[in-house]
Image (tube, rainbow over all chains, first blue to last red; front, side, top):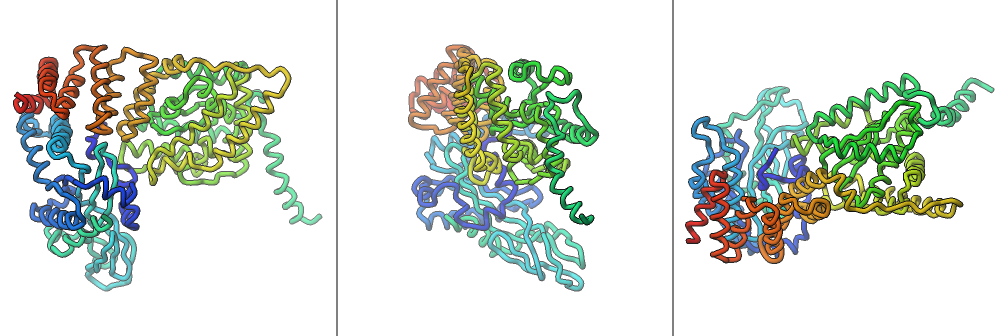
Length: 231
Length: 399
């Protein structure tokens, strides 16, 4: 199984995001002071989300805006994701698209070619020091007494029926911000809690309807701020 | 003496009597000896099958035959009466790990094969595992009830980590289905006493095979190299176990003792290049795995060994170039990458990817003419490549 290098994240990051969120110093795989010296210019990749979120463009815009603001305030040069997106778009056209016209399926070889060349082209044009991925994904929050807590945030667990003081794990979403060096080695990763994706009905946990996602702009901005807060 | 006192006495004596009854494989007429040992073998066999079906095991008949012949030289005719032949299972995994199932199948990670510098060093590890088998240590541990499970220490965990590389999730079933026993199977997982027995007997086996016992020291030092994996990576834990250092000290003492004995013969240290030839496919597989894990220096170490064995391999030279290029697209790394790509072309003048990468590098260093020439050659050889359109775009920009 070949995986695009960009997508290779150390196994441990996939397994336990919350562990990393627990301590801001652990966000860095390199010395924090060294990080600031080494990564003066950070190129952003377009905000990505698990397909289940069906993320509107407006959400991606808010997330990137918050992250950019924070990074710039801290003295980093930020290349907006539109630069990489533009290069990718040109290259997709050059290879004749990344979807097989006959089957409608993704052409993995072309997609891989575009991803690999686009990143190298971005580096050639802008000589960035690090490339960042921003992703919205699911995680598990712990809740007790109708209050869930994860990745730096808390949220009331919506419930119907009598509150019997249940506790345990509940599905939630978080925003991750990860920075990779030129050799695609992860140098920083941290998570900001976004919102709960389940609600309690009596003794059961049921999914929050998808049209209820991303309604609270404050939560989106806060999650993005937390994801970059150790930087 | 009352009943309780008798029970206490029996309990105190039990481990001693169990150990006394569990003779080494070369002192008994048949294996497995009893029903409980047979069921241990069955359970181990299930683990082996599960690992074999995980997609991480690779078959290479030549390497297996080489390892089998090495094992034959180590054990001589000691096990002939049992009709058991040792065999090997190779796992494509860049960490250094080796273990033995109780019926004599030795599992070795490619990372371990690759990090050894000669046959004697590999023999030190294999002899250690063979000794665990001959001494029936897994069975003894089972009887002694020493099933202490320490996360990250054993085969089960490492096997699970290998699976997780493929699937993206930990399959705890591999770790748990035989209870805690398999989490003890790696070389650091047996009791201290059994590890020392295997270490010491391993030296004897090396001596029988005419190999230098001194080579066991660098071999065991290499086991600590799993440290190269980053903090937080579960695979790092195995080698960082402090007992490894204790064992090396013990080995050093044992080597001194054996050398003082009358009639001790200094064994040989076979040529490294012969060893690299014998394990060449594992070197290439492991270099690819290391590159996937961004362990570029380690990848180059494996490729350098491969090139010593097979100097005219264009793939090895190209991959060496890639290891530099992926490490950095500037400075000395880029120059080294270009040199390696050119070396690949010396051995295969139609190696399209090498032309493309030279073109990319020349574009970075603003050598317009050379970039154009390399890209044109790439498109001439691979006009239908998935990225041909992109390379045409580069050419248009350069012309």
